[in-house]
Length: 207
Image 1 (tube, helix red, strand yellow):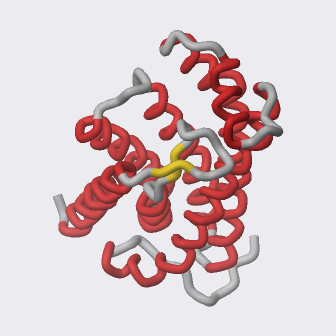
Image 2: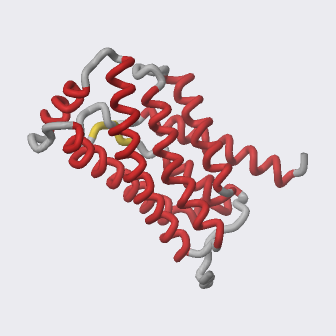
């Protein structure tokens, strides 16, 4: 195994560990029910995806979930962890695929914008049709129970549709924007430390 590959594997392992630790420091947002918790774990995932490509991002996302499960266990029968992985990947993949086409600031911004939009849409669809019904089934609850939790923080939430519109959509939109801003501001500084494949510069690269 050559030195370059060892450095790459080491960096991916380090980013996975950092992401898993960041998952432990989660907290609710005032406009969403408490079972939607914000964390910064997508920051190292996105950095890894930008540094080493989309596949590396997916690997970091998966290892993050496994490590967090080992450290923290689960209270959601694994559904929360699966949701975190799927919604995280829905942002990381499109963002890193676009950035990989041309590693400039302009393409980084394009990728992050598309990633945020993708995560917001995927998060809404998954919650409405898969995740919330799965939660309800495995935790022996009703969808109305989740709606009631949402209504407690926002009286505009009265059914599953308004729960998605007023809680899930703004939650993922807010998370995506914050994570994107952090990655955009720090990636150029940390990528040399990771021995990244490339890092963006000031050159244009229209395709």
